[in-house]
Length: 204
Length: 204
Image 1: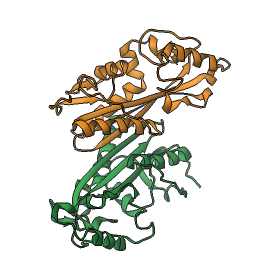
Image 2: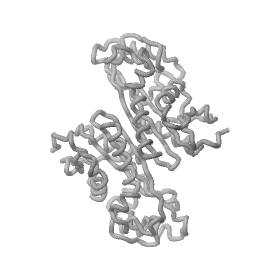
Image 3: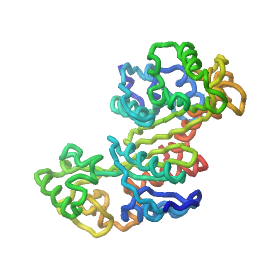
Image 4: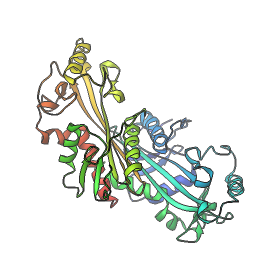
């Protein structure tokens, strides 16, 4: 099932369409074709049992690199809400149930932070990107973007918690930004650009 | 006890003289003064309870960053000996006792691999370097260098397992190389140059 010729490809170890779209936008001039797991013909469940964002991203890379030998990137990202003791944190995808739609999750979060005012609503998106290369070298980058939990959901762009993540500089939620605006400031955009720079710099 | 003005400094979270010397050699043109923990006035025992090299290096960075707010780099490195099921691996420093001198550890290893011939003596040095920056962003790089366990210890340079780590291209052990030769090919040299590139590239 796995494609044989993967040496000129870069596998992004995810099937999350929102993430794949962002990765393809940001890495489009990197010079390698980017494949999702599905596009690489890989159907596998990977247990993300790390305790940090970096660890979870590396776990995914290593498993897929073991199978394919290809260059593999993976992401692990989440939302830390200070008022909720930094929940959902590293468990963001599983928070409130893996299958619960995000509009429902976002409403539950808004209810839980209802009493919080102003800076009490501070939050940050965290994104770790890991890369494992054919020669076995490994890289991780973790970047954050600070924001506030919005009063109510707004916007149709992005995905996940974006409709309730207010970006103070713009006075808009992440979901109200254009893809270009979001990629320029987002945790995932910053982390992907840093890892791309690193890979270019080390000549891999 | 902790110095106040650390913003133009880079703390390397170790007191291992061999490592500190290599870091200062490789990062000397980076533009920041490099301090060991002792030089930064920090006296602390950090429990390295991660299960991977990257995790242990990040744990050290985070603790020291929490205390100082400074840019912190840390290393976790080890030797994987294939004939010994990749031991000592992530437990390299504690292997055969934390206080056991390396000449004794190296002799014990030579005894344990005595029956191994040729490629059966394959081994690799692994080095993870982590960086935590004042803005909270985090980076890790893991690099390896392949070698063979030597027939007997040789050389006075380097430190740790270097006298029994044979570098096939040179026909010498790591401990027989000059510091310049070692830094050019070593796991730590490669990882430090990669992280320096990354930090320069992201402008931090």
